[in-house]
Amino acid sequence: MKFKMYHENYNVLDLEKSLEFYDKALGLKPVSRINAEDGSYAIVFIGNDTTDFQLELTWLRDRKDPYSLGDEEFHLAFHTDDYEAAHKLHEEMGCICFENPEMGIYFIKDPDGYWLEIVPER
Image 1 (spheres, rainbow, N blue to C red):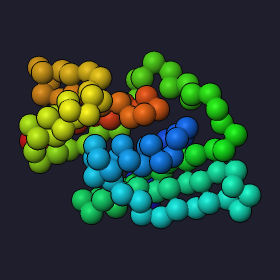
Image 2: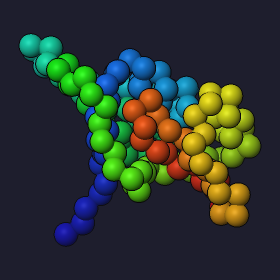
Image 3: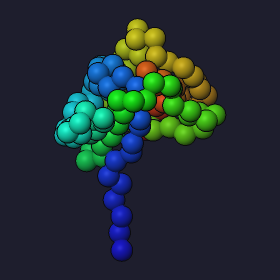
Image 4: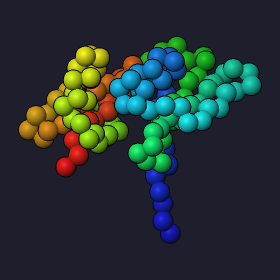
């Protein structure tokens, strides 16, 4: 029996703001969308052509309070083929939240506080 990772879910407070962030910061674009008939939720799967893996962004109409993300001990990691350009972009966006020069990595934070690791291709 084999398993292939398919997607990860992040709940977001402002779907449009999150979609704009993920597009600008990581080049992730909507792949598919599910809207509740009553407007109570929307689910947007985002991805790109580098992998089949997708990030599921879930918006709940009645949610007003920020989500508790614990101690920020979990994250999603991305390889980049141009680490310097990525770092410059994220620096300009003001979304770098932690850098580890010894390991050659850094983290960005999305509008809801989720950490995303940026790793150069090695």
